[in-house]
Length: 280
Image 1 (cartoon, rainbow, N blue to C red):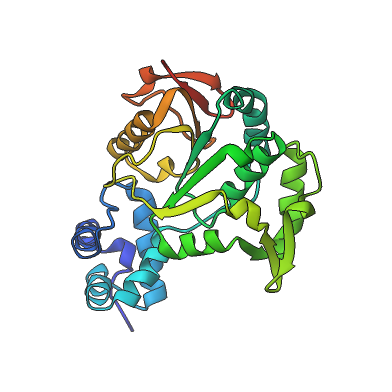
Image 2: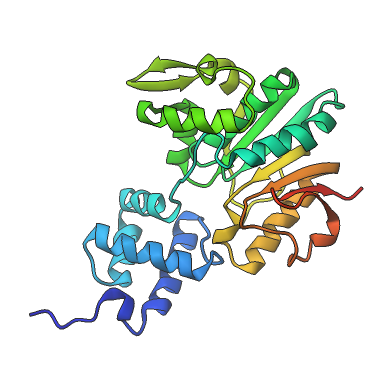
């Protein structure tokens, strides 16, 4: 009979997690040290089960010795959860409050931070297309997970997801048939090349990297909830510095600027949908 304590009951668990995150940063330059502890703890415990080890120190030893094991762990630490037009009311609010103002610019740049596997990227591309703005827009899609970025750039999604995509698109106020934007391919659907052609996919870490472009809209949804307060403020500072005067910022439904030290740099556009505008 095994009397060893369960991993989540081990007295040094939090210390071992700290050491694991420090090792990841030093070895691979991915910084999870200021991610929300409850979320990281939950994901590390899940990783112990999938790696069939009962201590974080053993997991650390494996990922330091084997890059493929780290790739597998990175996949678990950055679980992608997304849909085309996820939270349709957010996209309706963008169409109502943001796109008319963006239409006054001769050219546009949009940054989707934490783009995961690309669903939000293509949702925004379709939204911009239906507003007649896509051809003068460059979208920057960034994430820290290279596997997610590769999936996003491919723009291929499972066929069984299409009914949910379609419902979201319709609820978001889509003007056409969603089928106009994809073709059957690889046993699923592939988003149109003309949508993908407007997107630049790139690795970017909100914990360590700097501003890389001046943009008119930043959309970063359901990412900040995984950060601690200090890292949230760092990310929001990057967004502020990236935005043109009077540029727009969209956050997730459980995220807010109210407690950030950057709150005074923004004004609310849609409180319910967490859309803000940088103060000139």
